[in-house]
Length: 538
Image 1 (tube, rainbow, N blue to C red):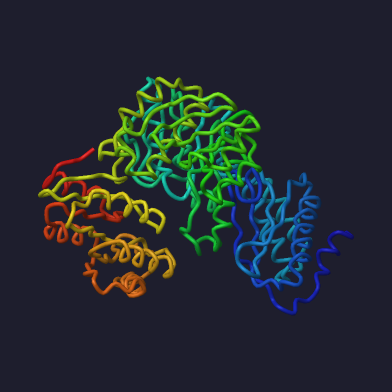
Image 2 (cartoon, rainbow, N blue to C red):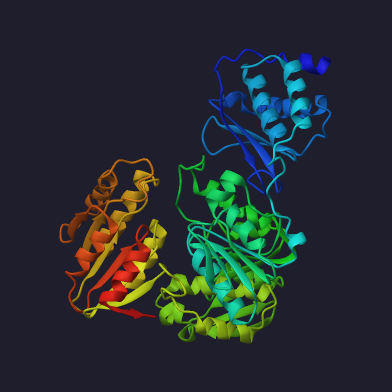
């Protein structure tokens, strides 16, 4: 009974804390490489945060002991937000573990003191498990097919699509889950954003599969954990500002920690492909369980040079346009951008990065250089093969680009690419807008960037993805961004939705003009519209 007495002796809190969240994570997560229960407390006195974390960890341990259950792995950490701490512990029985986490938190913050009743209830919960009592995480060793995980802020969908395409083109039955749906051998079996755990489970359940390519997004890992326990190859394309303020992640460092989850579940010997030019992905090479493989668009990258000098592996882009594989002192030219249609001859440098990442992943799977090269030459940035990602159309001798640029970094790539198509004396027109769950500062930064780089700017409100905002509210930070650019020479108009903005603006284009559309809400409709009134360029 001494331990129960200890649970009842929590000191009176001068600054009352509260429970921010009790979350069951079905797979690898920010805290552990196994299913975990996250117990997050808010309004914690910073001076006592370490003591509170220790007390909560001890309470979790004691409740397991007193319930007659093995003590799982337990970790504690400060969260991104001030005054927030978390303790996470491994679990096998959902109802038991969620209840234990909740009641441990209540004991620590002083909401409960009936420890004996808590222990009795925990023991009773174990006797009557729920139907979904076990973690939903897929054990990939039991599935028996190579798993390729692709994450990052930008480029993960295109990179995933390219990897899957090359594998299919080489004759392998391949499953793909992505933000646009679930595909088996190129045929869509489920539509929608399936870059979370449920998409991975669907692909890994497919009979006769040879490869599983899993786009793995931030949201799913934060809300439910990674959907699988291990992978054979990991790609992290980049980490840039996006989605900050959501699910407790307020900094780019915090976002990088989320993306790094998959780098810690690579099987020994498996490739961990990282962007050497990105300050947030490069450090992941020191924490991965796999073999770090770097890619860089800088021919003389110091990070790559140092890595290769110690026998490391890398992919680089040379001034002649060659994409070259380096393995210690050995080198192989895999392809030239002139022969990779998705790069538009090297005009789309972000697509060059995506191609390099995909090549490294395919080499890690043991795919031959010939099969990789043939697949790269066949893949196009077209609506058929990469819908919504850098799809080009010729409309009345103007160029229209439909692209899922949804943050500032993606917009910069789009603008740089679009400018290369503007004829002399013609204009670059940009339609700018994004989903309502971005912070005002991020939305304004996109409008400012567009105004600084364009000849005309079109602001679009959101209709499908307001995500808690009122109609018209998105235009407020967009206007602020335009004002911050201080470009009175740039014409600015506004529309209430993406499709109307695009169709009305297309009608104003002159020969040689280029229209760049940040397209997130109506990609299917706009691609059909542009295909009807113009010609696909790929």
